[in-house]
Amino acid sequence: MAGKQVIDVTTNRRHLEGLGTTGIGVGLVICVVGIILALIMNSVAGDGGHSEDHGDHSAATHEAGETHTDGHDKDAGHTDGHDGGEGAGGHGGGHGGHGYIDQYHWLHSYLMNFCYFTGIALAALFFVLLHHLAKAGWSTVVRRLAEGVAANIILMGLLSIPLLLWGDHVWLWLVEGAAEHDALLKSKEPFLNKTAWVVFTVAVFGIWSALVLVYRHFSIRQDVDGDVKHTHVLQKIAPPAMIFFALSITFFAFYYLMSLDAHWFSTIFGVLFFGGSLMAFMAFLTILCVILQKQGLLSTAITNDHYHDMGKLMFAFMVFWTYCAFSQYMLIWYGNIPEETGWFLLRQGGEQSIIPFTSDPTGWITFSLLFFVGHFFVPFFCILSRHVKRSKTALSVGAGWILFIHWVDMYYLVMPHVRSEHAITEQILIDVAFFLGIGGLFVAGTVFWLRQASLIAEKDPRLTESLAFENV
Image 1 (tube, rainbow, N blue to C red):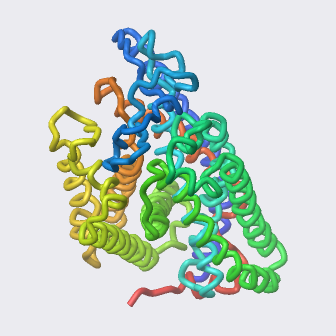
Image 2: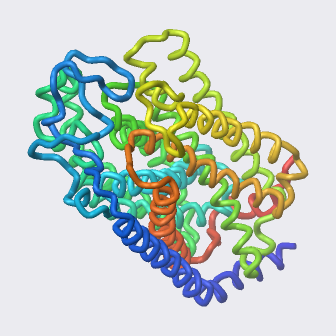
Image 3: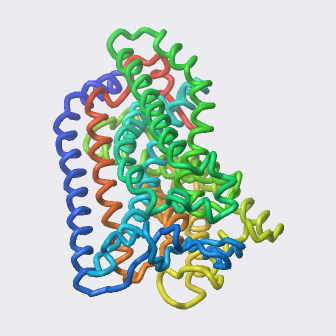
């Protein structure tokens, strides 16, 4: 067996270059398909002749006595649904007059997919940090793959630029003068302001990228000299890096997702985002391993015992996400405080809710119930069995569902805040177009980083333990 493992490590270096070129090409093709689909949908919307102004994010819409559209009645409310302000600063983007998809919907769709893939990259970084923090052995054979996925944080940092430039089409608190008409926004202004948000984004993506590069640097150097001191250095960095990671991913979720409704708050929201992202990363890692093995790479290094552990982590964080989501909902439902319930009323067919599929007031509650069933009950019974976790085919099916339902989770968090006059087919295709566009780049980026070094940490001191790993 030891001889076969050495052959496997050597072979994976020899064949990766050709596979890498193909993988990058496939990723870029997917990205181009997404861009073409977005342009087509923009033209179709224009031909449809929608003449409405699709949503001004204007300070002029803040007038006394208005009702805050996520369910809060305020003395100085605001139209978070973006419906039709006429004043200066409105963000119809000039599209309302000729019917093209407005910037408002485009940027919300972009945000949804940006957060989806950023979360997966961040969860990969967490996996690497946890590996070193726990001095884990079993995960050594897949750690280099996690490092490659985590390196996409650099790409996602670049993709945050459109949001930094046009964020006032998405977040109400970025609109100039909005806080002057809203007492709650005013009280949160030291945190929810453009300068703090931009500095935070640049800082965290910079530090996350630095952590990724440091861990990859020492990991790859160890392939050359085999010095165990590289492992010791990374283990010493892991504890403070993990503390920073926990704080930074929480505030990332607060800034980019929770603040879409700046009147609502949940202290567990960052944990929910983390749990869902890690669940999705384990699914992504599982599918990545299966694809590589089908191409003849890591064919003997990654065994059913490793898949079993990846399946267990996927299952565990699915249950963890469900526990946190239920805890959040149960406490808010029991407290029944208007400042807290509005976020859920928007997603339960309340009077002020914005229905995605139909004018039927039960639209969002139906969606919410189906989403919960799909996020817990389907994967629970799908990947609960030990036999499923040890079958690459069955586990891949479960992993594919996990990736899909996590995308639905991002839709659930972002899109209820969108009021669009476009048909639901057009809206969904726009969302899919951005998924393909950003996802294609994410795939290409993953393959690019993986081909820079061996797919396995060849001289890691725990590699032998990992190769011989058996799951009880």
